[in-house]
Image: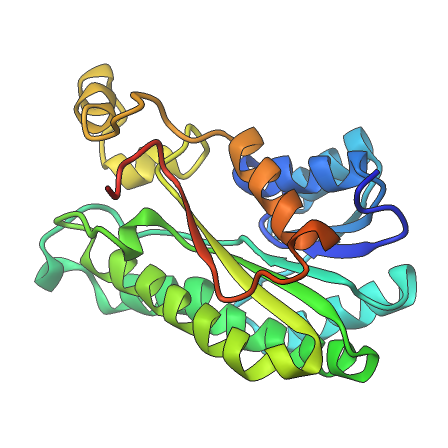
Length: 246
């Protein structure tokens, strides 16, 4: 019960890493707003694990403000924010990615961090404490060809995490990030471009420990960084990657 009596918002919690994090937080005693753009997915996770489902497109300012208001109404003061929602474009030469795809990647992966901060940081400042966790990627540390703008969006998130941490530390708010290697989640087929045994084997060959990351891997690290055990940890961007970035 390492998060007993804590409240948390987890975005993109309808599947994959977000579901794993939300589930672990609930198991550890937190009350969690399970946020996803997919209503059915959010409701299924909340029903299975005990959270509160909420539908939100995190790239939309009005919807994020409504999410924050719902969280305050149902959970009270917010202790933890996990910015997990994210998307990628299909692998392609950088100049062939459409403007529409580019805009959507940066809206979901980058603008959402600004929007959630705008909505929730004032509440945390008023209390003098809080923990924010951004789910970035090894793609922001060791970029892969043909995912140029996705790589750049995750690099942005890593820099934003460190900048937020420096600014908010004197106010009692910690900001960290996780950099997972690709996981066997709903995003994987789009990330690989073609989800075949051969493509999986090729990618796994780049990971020294020889396996994808799992929702449990991310949940364990998220639990530590969002708990009091990490009370002096801020500005850390932790690789969960089986040695991929060494």
